[in-house]
Length: 238
Image (cartoon, rainbow, N blue to C red; front, side, top):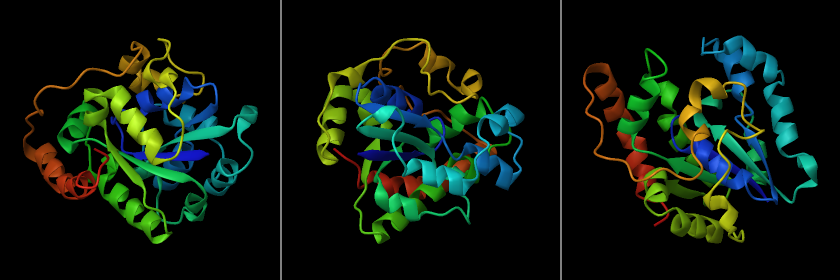
């Protein structure tokens, strides 16, 4: 089985990669399209040059690798993807050959968390519009992708991971509920910027408090992102 997990940034995505990466039967890959995304967009993300060096593949080469042999002869692969990386012109046909899952999080939490690390956040940066569009594209391919909310995972990790595994016909493995502190060998080179909290963790974090109160441009981005978020949230795994 090849699982493509689609989310925006700051969305429990690294913890989910660690959960699957702690299974003996999975190979995991961290944001394989990050290099093509930066080259095509020209964005000046933190550690841009290091990322481009570590992700030299073209988008076509990435897609070929994702549907090629799984490294380490593992039975399964888990692909952690950022929806905003799938710029126009990047082929999507390979998505029909993987099990697509969508990981969502309330946009107020995403904007607050992403904005603490990256200035001048835009709606495009956080991937909500792209996530809904990708969901529609994959539905048009004949799949009915599973949607899971990070808040539900944090509320009941074992319950929700069991439900996720059942929904995609994968046996649940208790190893998914914890992982060693300090990161994973598959971490992207950008991990020192973004993964500090999850590197200190050994399991999923507890339930979050009230939504952050945002104003100005940040609040406007949240309002715009709520439309695609709420549409996907209405179909989430419960």
